[in-house]
Length: 216
Image 1: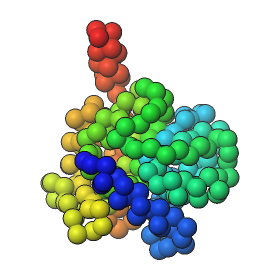
Image 2 (image 1 turned 60 degrees about the vertical axis):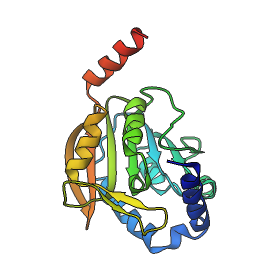
Image 3 (image 1 turned 45 degrees about the vertical axis):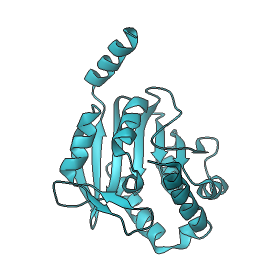
Image 4 (image 1 turned 90 degrees about the vertical axis):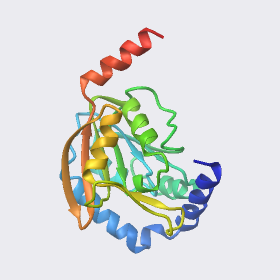
């Protein structure tokens, strides 16, 4: 992973930002968001994180559905975040900040749920992203991973697309999650090849992290 990789991705999405919500992909993603909400289960006054939040459409939809929800959106693109802040219908319940999914600046066990919607395919270090999700997720919290999937056992890397992307099978997703202590509880097909995988953080991983901190 290099800074050039992140710079390239940032520039790509910065260029899309002003027209992104009017492009076909955005319309497609909004349909996915609608289907996703059928499976979202949050506690009262939930604190949630959206990785690769883009223009903030998912968080606005979540805030409308759950009136006492608070959310943070993180994205690499400053221009996408400008659009998200301009369209933020639920400030100060929703806040949008620039950052990388591989190195989140949030506290341990800060969020009741973490969302990643059509952004995980861009991450060059998926295990590191899973590790960070595990770290910031509360015990019993859920990670909602929504992305294009492949039916094969191993990941599919597509290099000819700008910046390169990686697609993962359900088994590969489960493996990545289990490596970081997350338990896969369900897979749901949302739209075409788009798959929702729901993970939860069990008590055992919390106790292991606590033991590790106490012995440092």
